[in-house]
Image 1 (cartoon, one colour):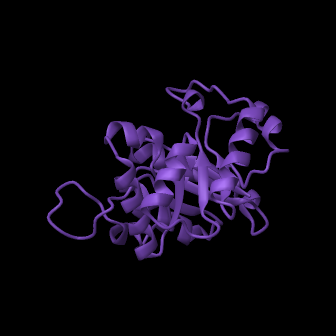
Image 2 (cartoon, helix red, strand yellow; image 1 turned 45 degrees about the horizontal axis):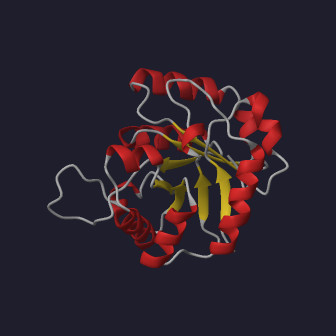
Length: 208
């Protein structure tokens, strides 16, 4: 079971430290038997969080919210997979907000996936419809056991507002998606609360 927390564009450095020290008090819940917990902060905070996690020996992994599909080169503003490799082991690929704000095409999402594979990073491919999976298969090679996050657009949390999807909708999507990528595993990437979580636990999900 995976639990992936996307911080989006939130927290300053002091808030990052406060969050970590509060989490550290719950360290016993982060034992080896816990779910695979992945924190995806803004990229600039990966080094400090990685250092704190290693110092405290916590069972947490880090992920980047985005990487460029290109390697090193004359690409001002880009961050390539090799740059985050020392601190992160996961990358969110094609999150709906990133697709929109960075005007990412399906080809660019595929190049991000290829970049992660070359660097040895584990990608979590975010999709909101079946066409995105079909397009990805036509452009790139989807690894066996690939992690996908289904994020129905109407169920993405914004400004603290949670709008969970209907569990039956999520189940129908995963069933259809499995016909396209049979070995893939799916997370539910829409908003979820402690209350709504229970309604998703019976679905064929690898996590949230």
